[in-house]
Image 1: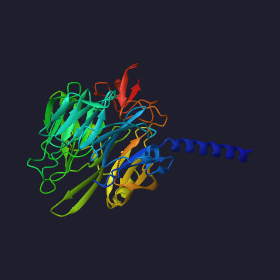
Image 2 (image 1 turned 45 degrees about the vertical axis):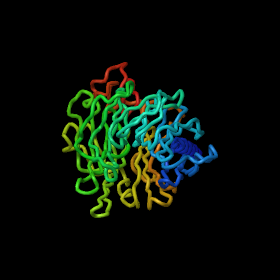
Image 3 (image 1 turned 90 degrees about the vertical axis):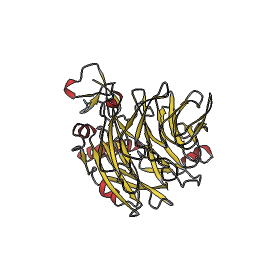
Image 4 (image 1 turned 120 degrees about the horizontal axis):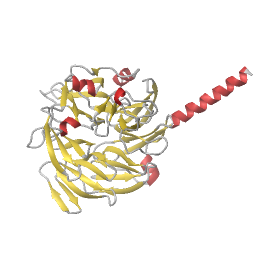
Length: 425
């Protein structure tokens, strides 16, 4: 009888573990080599790379040149920014192509409110439904998801990069990244754009140059990276409070460690791998850190930053040839990182448990740098950072205006957000 009970319990545990691991559905965006037109999608599920050419498998065609960002818009739609193909490709979560917007040259990063997709671009012109628009600097394009056409644009700074949506406003990090080739300086600003009117309403000068890379967002907070000028000005990072920015208050804190590849954790913190390069030495320096944005902002950066990651993540990343991406599955808490190795050959995807135990290393394609976890049940919440467990009261919650609410003040029947997912008290 005991033996039968043991077998039954073992079988149930095996089934539970299988079901749990099968919830991991991850798309990895491989950039390929710039101008080689060899960007690819890798699809990872249940601890296995299903395909390293998933888009071609599903559609019989190549994806395009230098994909730079990927987001999910709703249950049925995903967008991919293809930088050197000058295309925003739309597809289903099953990998099937739906449409493509071909009017945004040198596109970079994406955000969406479910009705429109907003795209940053280094380019100087854009074809819209109202005619061709020209820009001295870079711009943000607004794509209508009923027609997949650009219906509005807004000029921001030179070479705008990361973009995030907060309370109807787009926060756009300007780099000025072509400063070494063109006749302008590095940018130091974040442009705040009214998403409805597509007009700049505020410009925040951070006083640090080259705000490069995809933004990570946790409620009202953004994590921004500055690689410096690659010479005399060192790399650093910023935490920005979007709510304070909209109210015209002091809204950011700077600290000396770069956050080149960052992600948001289920408890609302940021994890980051920093990479800084100097033309003076020709060398890269790396760092790993966990950031508590509340603590960083409340102490003006004197605390809230720990140069640690869970489990073996830090040592695993330090052993990589070239760390190239970091991601936490917002549905399950499993963690991922990528190694680009030489930038010319196939890279690797690493998977860790939510506690930081290394679960596997998987060969993918060239320059794997961007991630999208698909919801285990196929239902996209519409919130960028859902959490795995919504049954218990959150330790850090925000109301629908993005204001932090302490657990003891949560009110019955009210709706809050924890790490991006709706939470009903």
